[in-house]
Image (cartoon, rainbow, N blue to C red; front, side, top):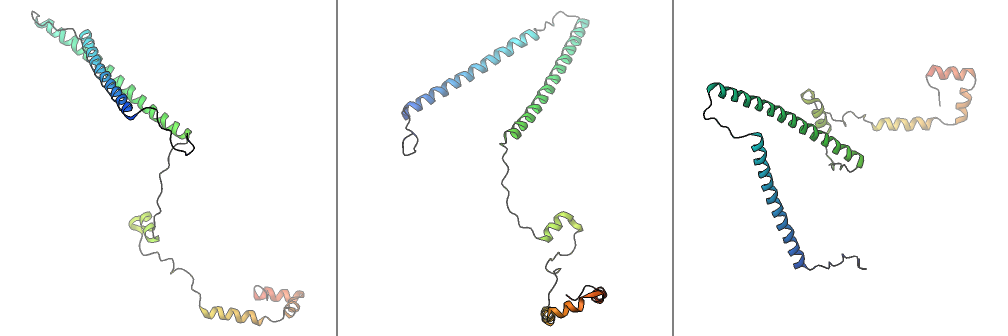
Length: 189
């Protein structure tokens, strides 16, 4: 890398790159055509082995019925094999999927989806949870305890009337003070 941090220039010119890409694509197309031809030839060869040409001319009715029974028996065998193969393929695909999930879990590369913030009022939340059972609005502010200004003024007056702390200590000392404290339900402090 050069000191500027840019990518180094490639030593192959653009026209050379293009010609190489064209050659690779041409080679890939040729390979695909060859694979198709090989598959077709394999299919013809396989069918030639498994299904010899039928010679129906000159056969009697009993021979034709036997031939039909043999063909039905072969069809049953092929169907059983096809079913077994399909079951195996399905089972292997399921196993592959489970193993992929395990690899993702072990690798820690499972991407968590980005969550969006959603604003939901208390009424909407209760409606979503309870459905049609939710009736009435849930106004949380209405349930709050209201504080009146008169109560605040009375609390200030009570704190100023306490006066000298020594008088309170002397009044509460001894057994009589404790008796007063229990009688009044909490004490004078």
